[in-house]
Image (cartoon, rainbow, N blue to C red; front, side, top):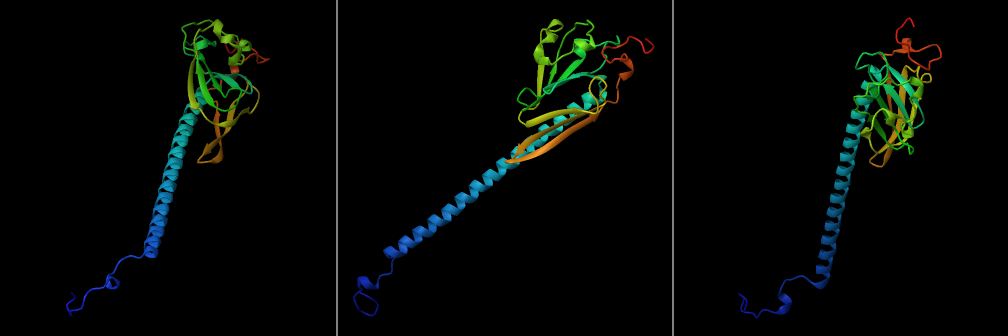
Length: 215
């Protein structure tokens, strides 16, 4: 009974009709879809940002290593489209090139990476400048049985080396390459000048080193 003494009717009860329930479900699904889309977009944005940060860290490290090696090296000894070899330093002060003093900066046949190759060895045998070839020819195995590899940029493309003049008289090195950051391809360049260039040690033809400046 109601307060007025009249019986309650089913038509007087308030509730959700089927249409109202369906509308509510549609609205809820739209809201949940929007939330899911936003969460996915934020996740992709975070992944893109993380990838960009990681690639930039690789770029800074590669620029630092390559620049330091080139600036302080004695000579760019030889170069191909896949790599170039530098006389890093005269560690034992013998005035000649030894295997442990060589470093290759490589891109590989696919031109899709930048790495360093060094030869840890106590072999102090003198290497003729004209004997230094592409690392892939394995000419160096006469002097060292091992090589160590340091990946500077493991994923890039279109790596190219260029010099102001052909080795061994080069005094400026340029490395250009592309990197993909967040689905955007960007072009980068690492450039360095040989500040410790030992070009005065070259013979007239540039095929060998002289022992003394006045030889």
